[in-house]
Length: 467
Image (tube, rainbow, N blue to C red; front, side, top):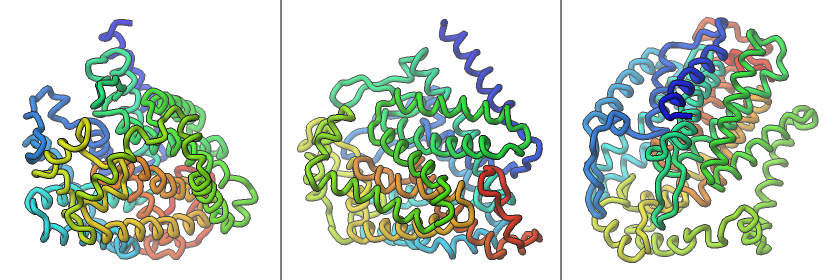
């Protein structure tokens, strides 16, 4: 097929998916388009790239170049997000109080700029990082947050995943690239295969939740055509995961999907505490596999080297280069300045990330940052597990996001601003907190909605109103 014909065909197909998935009974706020556009941009490439604007080449040892257009677009989205959150400030403040580890983490990130070598650059990054939290609050404070959550996944997936397949197949100059070793990789709408994988796997988990919920709840309006649209999107998501060849993302999708399916078992639903035993069994199995020397065999079975493609070789070098083991270099400022030029001289092929989320946090925030991330993960798991008791279907998805985020960051850096995984981790924590509030009626009473528990959520309905 000619590339121009393919472009038109994919555009029509994407429009068709939006039409098939339309549900007139839903009334999500128009403000939901803000986080959708935010993820469209941050889940792919800068807007300046798509408009064909040239960017200065990044030089090791110097501050990365930025585009005025990209800064203006991000600032506009954040400004509008602030307006939305201020209009919903009671709900937002209540959620932030419940999610205090996230607030504490962002506060320490700001404080860390006091000892950073590049405080101005770090402050700009911190302001941009607040955009993730703002957009999460826009989704979570929606009058129908579960519907908004599902609609967010659909709108982002309908555009980015088919577009990735289109670029890879018909526009290889845009959809493929080369890594530092000269190997070709399929990047789709992103800049590298790992980013393509981390874009696809959280969306794939969310779409799987949507498909299962529509399949089981036969009373959903326009169920058949919406189910068709979600099944097509799930096929695209799995196809992109396979094309990306990102072993970590694929493994996390399999892990998360398994968790979601197992938590739907009648035994688990009857005894919600069994979800703890299930998660503990999975984590202990992985730990025993590594302890007994089975990690190399498992990696070889996945087509990967035992040294994780050189990752284990660079980790000691990076840890030794940390300027302060307790406080780190300062928020998002380790990979700027002379350190980058030095690391390029001692690491074959250079490096621009640690390929490990925990080490990445250590480099920027030291052991203090590691403790904060551990606190976020523990609080996140605790909150999502409680949400599972309120709504096993949605709660199972939220638990899967937290558990897979913890696993993903063992071999990739996902605890970072503008990363889709970080966005969905924050969204899981805040959404789970909203579900808890729905249980005690605190948020529902402020919106003038009934507080009776049975009307809060239907366990198998993806678009049930949790607030």
